Image 1 (cartoon, rainbow, N blue to C red):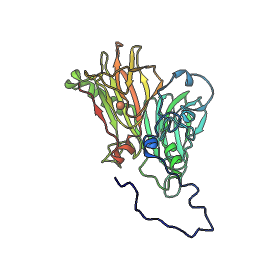
Image 2 (tube, protein in one colour):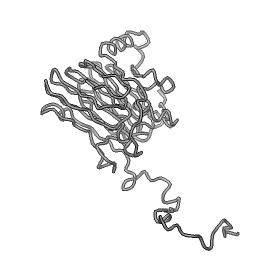
Image 3 (cartoon, rainbow, N blue to C red):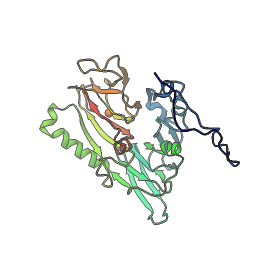
Image 4 (spheres, rainbow, N blue to C red):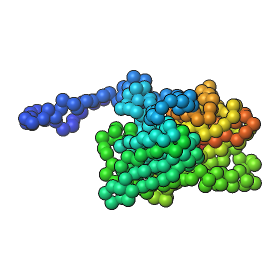
Length: 326
Ligand SMILES: [Fe+2]
């Protein structure tokens, strides 16, 4: 069989004197480069868990949950696109939550205080009183100042790693600042728990959304947030999605955990699962594409707050969320 190519070619091509156009032009055999997500190349996202002791005591500080060295990306980064942190503020202290990000989400794990952001071009000054259980999200703009009235801990997730990878800085705010007060979240969760159909459900969750993004139903164009309740005795069927989840455990009793793994058995359970035991105020990573299921063997209700890059994945039509058979 004939295997000689008869494509275009040039015996002699004039060279550009100003730039060595071909020096960085590489070619790989497809068979060696088709899947570059592997250790030593594009590092897979690891299982990782942070104990609440990292924010328990100490001075006012930004505490990044930083996996940038393992991922081989500029830090701090918890996943290729997102960075999660704890912000620990002593009463009376303030700190700036500075990030070159399109979306910056805050959840108040404990304490209370104020957010202040000065006036900027075309945007009025911002001010917000926050307290335990509040969630608020800010678009790109001037860095906010968080001022604590009481000793406080906030969970902070933003998408600066994505922008750093793209080599860009935001030019515009894509949505308005938005606040979900604790009492509204509690009221809506209680309504879910009171719903007669909830007695049969083992997944009771509120998806937080911004009115600017009706198509994706996400809290920003990149971020996705959910307040989830796992009732006592619940064993959730496994599900998976291509977004990463940076999970915060809001509260739980001993006996709550998540099972994570890459394969399902014929009965829909996760084969050879990695077990992540929950701790109130702890955090963990659920890698994209991994099956995961939450289990509550304690006697009380448990709550979690997963933050994902599912706003971006939904826009790209790459979320690919799937559920195992119940
Ligand atoms: Fe999930």
